[in-house]
Image (cartoon, rainbow, N blue to C red; front, side):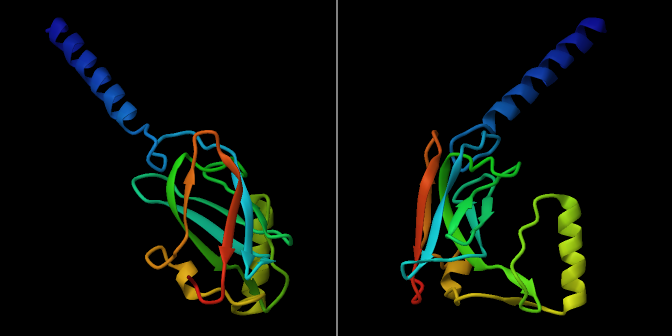
Length: 167
């Protein structure tokens, strides 16, 4: 009976290890480690501030996202702030960040600031997008023309060049 338990335990441990290892692959990051990734986003050649950039893996994996600053620059986050994206191929969406009552765009750094920003939005009415319009094609994973490959060493020079026609 004891030998049977030991054998079953070994089978369970080995099966668990194989399942975990199977998830660690280069296809958009199931279980992979994020690598430093970021860049700039422009609309018709001009930097775009306050847009949410989301990298959605084309296969199984975890998305990465970031928010653009005044110069259009952004850093991607998968698990921890600014940790980057897991190597792989992504469809990229860009969406205007909504702000309360047309106020300034906020990108809180910690949970307490996020709660304050949410309370402020609740008092200010329905959120309204600010800045130049982003074509709806860029907001949809199915319609976005943007794709990007994150290499194993990361990519800090991503250039997302949007245009008003959404192509």
